[in-house]
Length: 210
Image 1: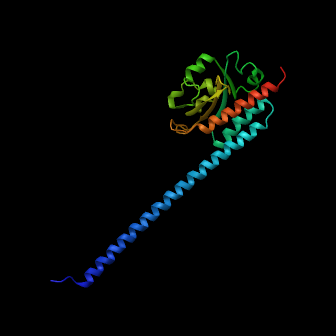
Image 2: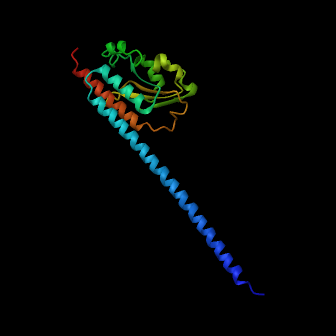
Image 3: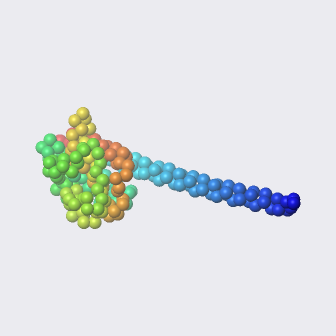
């Protein structure tokens, strides 16, 4: 018994149609992956330029109050954050004393915290602390009266930019979204920005008459 030629042709056509359908699915999947990759690149590019713009703004400021307001408001606006503040250590050789007038003028932006308590929270002074949910039970220390709506935060160390790397305070980014900051959050760019802010602040203080 011989196989009908039409059956063989139908089988070949069916096989080719199956291969073609698979190729189309593979191509669609590849296009989706490329689109996702391009979207991530564009997203990262926007973040980089946003941080660059903030740094440029900081470099043009000549007064400590303006510097703090520029940093905190730029971060809030560019990254849709609920609240951004700066906390300073009360250590005698820190920045709280030279910035006493700024602390009084910016009660919602600039806070002072005991060095012992700051060190207890920033157990690794070189590392940003990410806190979510109830982990931030003492949020009022970092966000003042606005702490009630904070659901996730990044506490970024402000360090003396010399060999001591002394902890001077923190830059605090607070969001009302529980998943805005997670342990997997990359903090390299925000740490770079905190370092630029510290350098600018100390430069301004050094040039300001006592």
